[in-house]
Length: 331
Image 1 (tube, helix red, strand yellow):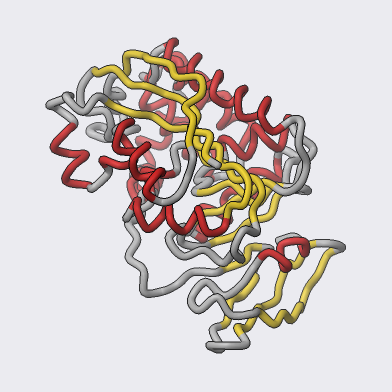
Image 2 (cartoon, one colour):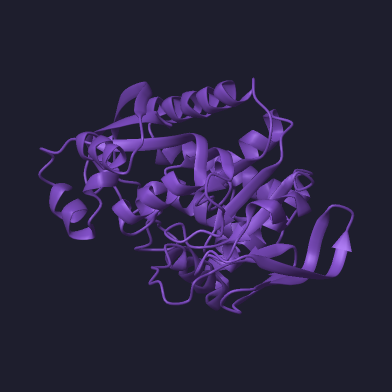
């Protein structure tokens, strides 16, 4: 993590001041060290350049576990791995092309993995939905191109948006997630593509962040809000730490959608996946929000693998439906 973040951080548990000690430092980046809270004595290490600020008592569901199972399954079945990697890419169905990309990436073959992933996208998602996603990325970059200073990206996951920002903007970026294995993967991936120089990596739960009040001028997220439990808690916490603008690439479904409604309500994601309820939740947390670049597109379930029989790339949507994508501009 870069040293500029030190002035922005505090204890995520009690909001106390942090005392820093550095073991290994490379210019303006801390590779190994720790921060100790002067109030509650909690210790937060920095390992492999990743700042770890997780509050242990918060419950989290690992949304990456399915992907890990897929990679493990392939490794445990060498005959399938052989077919997956040695078959002509165009002979594989889109799901198996995606799984091939995962296996290649796990082996550090990032260029080959990208080629397989890009080919898979063509069969996994409709042309309209892919075009709309690109337009949302373009809008975020355009909105940020006229300003300066650090960008904090929330729930970065595989760094799709972080990579786009790093390629197109000359600004420091903090990529965040609660999963340390995901952030380790992100470091290797960004290093391979020469994008790691301006990127810091932080692990924390978005419901209890390690940032000071108003420390963040610019925050972004790519469909990261639905990945965090307790939307009301999340939005209140983000309102505490963001003094400027939050640009949230979001997707919404119709509330009258009878197929997906029960699943959304059971997961408690109404405030993340329904437009009206999302706007109400933002307002309740003290945000002013505008919706930019709203686009409607037909979306369909992703196909299941043939070689990896029964495995599916995305578990959502469950049936063909209409999805609205947009950028929520919250201040």
